[in-house]
Image (cartoon, rainbow, N blue to C red; front, side):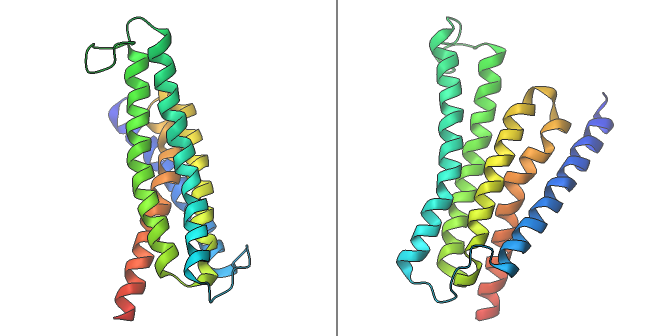
Length: 177
């Protein structure tokens, strides 16, 4: 598969991720599927943020655990990436871990900001975004070895919800000024 073919494959799968993100988050924002009240207090908002953060935390833990197990059971990886060149498997797991960390930090910031700033009736959004995060990471983990086109949807389902939520929060804050 040449570069242009890979680019097309990534683009197509990221479009799928973008469409799923838009549909799910619009559903959460407009229809309030969990029935949250509009006038939530700070402790209720904190609960939404905390529950939403469980998904990135769990997937980050799994990523760390996968690499740790690889290092523990393989002589060429046990000394860690800083002391050895490591196996291809360890390098792949390290890349997945790094991407999961980056995505998780971004998502965590956005979930907290959303819970603090947005109307209570939209508190379904970070919870649904957290579900998309979990689905996206699972797809990303499962398809990583197949190459860039295959992991596009998984990447998009973890990245696009954070970006869409950030844009909505910024617009909301600017409109309120």
